Length: 338
Image 1 (cartoon, rainbow, N blue to C red):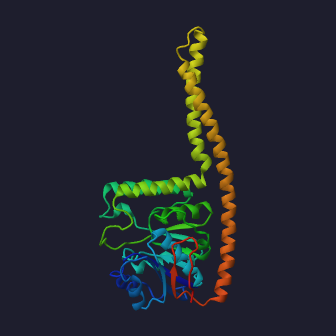
Image 2 (cartoon, one colour):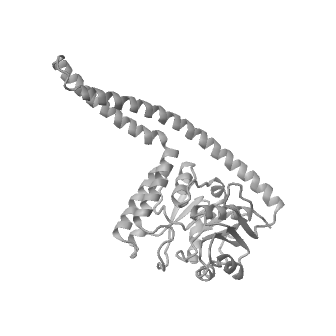
Image 3 (cartoon, rainbow, N blue to C red):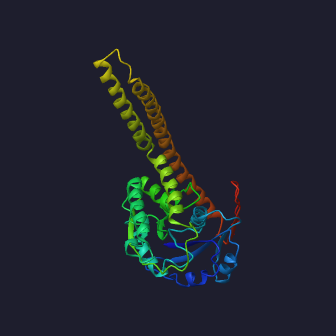
């Protein structure tokens, strides 16, 4: 059983030594533990510091691409190393390495394929009341979208099985946390929450500058995910609303017309009702088409999973490891594996 711990980094040269020092060297049930550092286009010496600390596998993105891209680059590297379990943690030592055995235990025991470290945000002193409220309702929305009982969906401290990692794909550049939970839940992967402690915050988040910015960007991610996985419900709800308005105003016009056919003072209701009904019909058609596209996307996701698994088996048979990897920012990105 092989565990690979991946750490996405952006200008974390000062924090890497402490973070790496706290990682476990042995875990019961795990035969081998390796570390992958993903340098997301850092302007400091993150990659050099990682190598000086004895990290054998460093993935270097030539330009800063964001947390989601760094996360997926780490997943690819961990799979190439033959990981049976992958743990993702932060470079700023927010998540103590001593908590990793708790995180991987549900996977080792076969109970789960994705394990989320629950920070228990309601009890965190540095979380403001507004942030706790956003966390609570945001996680509730993700639970509805994913159909999984995830308590702390924004938590980046998580463990996943190889099967789960092969199925993951992130469409946005902002964050992987929300979208991967929704994808895992929608594909039927077993998910478990594990309460974990976190270290005191030493600096503000580099992912967003304010709660308002996070709410806007995370809201866009959730809306897109909702449209991808439940298009009929999303567009259908709007169509039913417009149809209700059309029927209500159409009924209003008909009521007064039947009472006095010679008076046309409510013709505005008829015009608005007609427009609302037509738009509702078009939205329903669009919703049905979106649902068909979603069904096709699910088949493509299954095909991508099978292709990735075959490619992984072929690559692992011909390559001995990851070593230092450099990835370009273009669509035709290249990697040197050694």
